[in-house]
Image 1 (cartoon, rainbow, N blue to C red):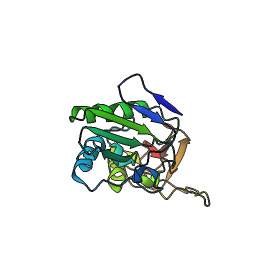
Image 2 (tube, rainbow, N blue to C red; image 1 turned 120 degrees about the vertical axis):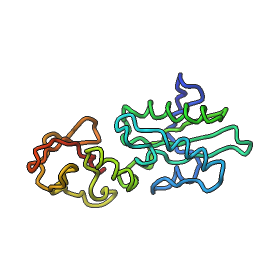
Image 3 (cartoon, rainbow, N blue to C red; image 1 turned 45 degrees about the vertical axis):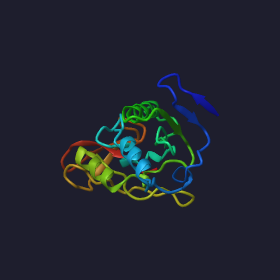
Length: 195
């Protein structure tokens, strides 16, 4: 399925991953090594997540790949949303396109790919630290991809560090977070669920 978005121009959503190596790998994103693609990566990587504005899309592992044409005029970025129905994906796609156009690229294409499925394992350590500092408990553990489902016994409070916490609601301010309360400091907090 290919759908061309009405705005901004040249932004494309596609159900099949592009041939760029980082977009088809099962692991986390990889920064390009060559100069032109690395510079374009830096521009796209600086886009912040609209739902958790202390994180960039690089911190989240949402930015999968960036390629630049030989003449340097065209750039293609690939993103994978945290959920297939993520309400922020259109804003992220639009923001990446705008940032790349503002950086001087005349032809910009932003592909949204759903495979491989995004996992919290792709989040950077810096991103997890930023979440904690913002008051959101980062995901703990690894995602169960083709293996046993992990059971979270406790979630560490990002404010006081206590493990004496309890889940109040399976879904918090966004579907990728749960609402918790610390029984030690009595503060509520979001927990970015492992998936």
